[in-house]
Length: 375
Image (cartoon, rainbow, N blue to C red; front, side):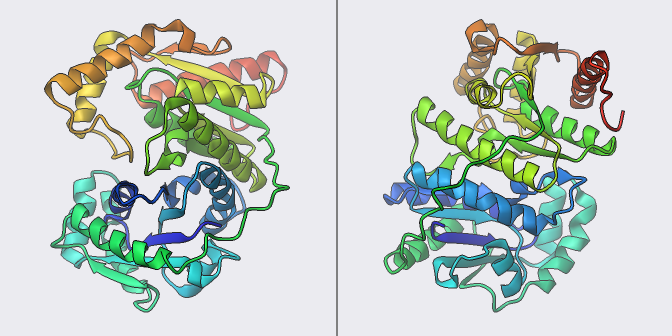
């Protein structure tokens, strides 16, 4: 694998925020870096594999995609609490090719950040307890985050990485014979920007999981972060390859269904890989007013924080441009995959969208004489 910078620490300490900023800083320094949040690699239910096994299984496939795109180093934000745990997450990767960075904060800071995050605030105390379980000798670099901004932390880590990479080989090449396989069933959600694809996709995943389905979930945007910007075609190619690899990993670990949310161009490419018999595509439509309202609320920070969401913080002209772009995508029928079933989400919340997708799938299964598991 590529040399790995593993940013560890308890929930709420800022791993993903710092990691995402870090690859940008590395890019400005001339180092192409890739980033992935390990939480995005363990979204599966009803499978035998542990979260550690899911992450360890997924990373080699992503490594291939990022390496082909020119990455020099892979930055991962994820939990790790001991040398044995880190080794299990990165089996076969020499310790010398892993830079472990431990972000720490006081119990009060951790609790406050989890509360500010706005979701799973009930885990604040558990986050503090987990922080105490992390082996202080695990990390190569340990940084206190309480009084430092993400920019300051990123700058400190960047300088350490640049020096480390001078004496670190470029990692062992990925095996050439790797050939990802397709899951048994793929449900893909796409649509214009601001339609709530990630929220609806995760809700559908949760709905199927509650019904007893062995299921996994991935968001194509979350597996395609690079330091140096690419044109849309190159970025779509990377995200397609990485999404295919992650979907295959989820399937190999027991997920019979994989839910994928993503941009129209990536979803169309994936549909071409999987074919109509295995993949079901849903286009999430919304009225111009609904898109404007949703993008405006996201700009204010409403809803769960999603890395790479460039709508957060938009104001004035930039916000108007984002809304206009989303409305243009909604009206551009050439973006809509021909096989897609349209669901008008204008008056729906995420749970209702997931229910509409599930009902459509159930009706299709029943008409074919094969009821949906967990129905």
